[in-house]
Amino acid sequence: MAIYQYNFPTKIHFGAGAIGLLPGALREASRERPLIVTDRGVGALPWVAALEERLNSERLSARTFSGVFGNPVKSQVLAGVEAYRAHGADSIVGLGGGAALDVAKAIALMVHHPGDLFDYEDEKPGARPIDREIPYWVSVPTTAGTGSEVGRSTVVSDDETHVKKIIFSPRLLAQRVLADPELTLELPASVTAATGMDALTHLVESYLARGFQPLCDGIALEGVRLVSKSLKIAVHFARRFEAGEHGVRNDLAHVEARGRMLNAALMGGVAFQKGLGVTHSLAHSLSTVRDLHHGLANGVVIPFAMRFNRDVSAERLADLAHAASAEQRSAEGFIAWLEKLRAEIGIPATLAPLGVGAADLDRLVETAVGDACHPSNPRPVSRADFVTLFRAALGAS
Image (cartoon, rainbow, N blue to C red; front, top):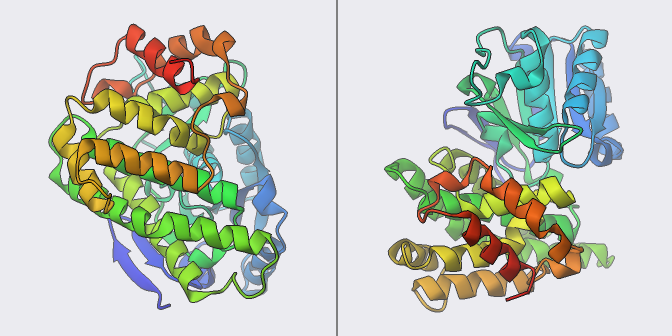
């Protein structure tokens, strides 16, 4: 697989082996002391230590901060800022899934911006402006999900309340993206499935979101096509790899499927600048109240959300069915395709197997009503609607 370069607007290098371009990217930017920001799981992998050693062997002084875990919270950002300053860093390499990349962005923000992280919350009355230097940073995704590698925002939760806060600025965009499918080849099947459904949800919701943004619409449809060709294959290979089957890791079909998913994820990250919708409000609430993985939550609830939107978005849902090559090119056909895909990749049909129950309903509804995503949903969502949607997702109706 060749390494391709394209800008949108970030300079993106995509292809097997793209991680090898990191030393040159840092030197090109005249940076010598990068801080690698990653999560505990990725940070423990042997190739991360080898990457740090390689950077150090090429006259760069690299250190790794692996204090990210679960849904990112402010304390992780503050610890990362301390690590940046202790190292005397001049740049950041965000390495990992959406959590690590969001924390990397937030660290980059707070290195030179005063006050509290949440002083910069998007649309907060009296929010501080993001107007100071942002350190040079490179994003290196190791999952195909959030699209945070090309995103202009970071989502970080309050440690105490677990409420998600969104900080937005085009200045938070990475200066370079290295999208290397080889870094995703050993992802467990469950993580592949959950992150893949996150990417798909971004694409679907951005296409349905209110407003006129034909560029995002086109990107979303192509992204859905890529997911339809790739997610089941990636999960299939992940299961075979986990079972110890020899030779499947580097199978060309596996690498190509992972590559298509990486592109679909970053396309979702671009497309959802148009807006998201009710699926994300449901999922954000589940992450806040029950600490569910965001992609897994999206994967469970998206068919319920699309059925809610069906009466006002039938034509657009039919477009999505066509992009996904669903058996029926209709709104109901797309919902059926979602449900079939969900089952084939191991995402539960309801929230019950994940330990979410009726006792959580009031908090879930309260949190979802206050979420910032559903106002751009094509159909207005009331408190009563959220009750109905959560009850359906719990398997209660």
